Length: 296
Image (cartoon, rainbow, N blue to C red; front, side, top):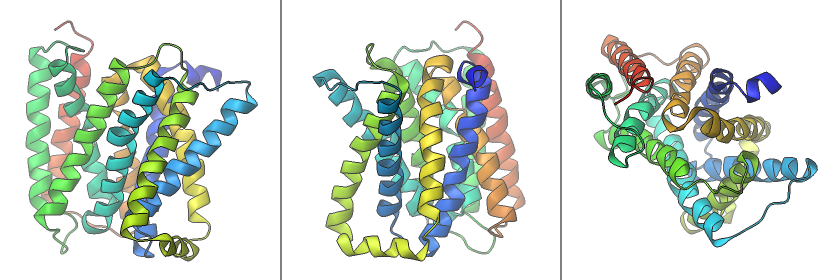
């Protein structure tokens, strides 16, 4: 465990695996009638409580300052609350595998934002990688989801907006990371802040009675919270060890898990153009990743 905690690649692999589990879990929950806002709340609240307990058990003493409060609110909104809601709202329309492919664009958008905010200077390889990734995204978007079940354009655009949110969060958390806080504390605080935001939205849109839908999937919430809690602990550690662009590659690992589960366990099928677009996205991600190892 100690070697994984200090290895960027090990952290990336573990975080991506746990991240990828969320999409097939979410699709099953949505098909059972659980609202997307409720499922996103379950993840945020459950993970926040578990991580807070871990922090306290290990002798941590969380503190709340105006700086940390700002960090929690902004990071929670753009990294967790909104993109998670979008993912679970879109997955019944797009499929777990298709949504996973969209998430793989996160490294490309992260590089774009890193360049824009001066976190990373551009170079030719990075620019070409961004272009290749976008071409792949356009190809995937054109297929509009599973074979024989084309989604509305609005849902395709929602799927494309997920990696934009994730990328913005990756860069923001690096820029504004509080110097006096560790990864577990920040993960707990951001998840609890996201839970509050999601709960407010849920109560106004679906009402308290929506919680009854969780009885349709009695074991799934516990499995999702366990996976998400582990994912967030490694996620914030990866932010420190690997940096924002390397962190964004969890979408690539998660896509392999989500796509595999969608096809094998949920019976999803995709057009050849979707696979070709996914391949181009993979090439674009590989190029933008390689660009981080070179001076701009």
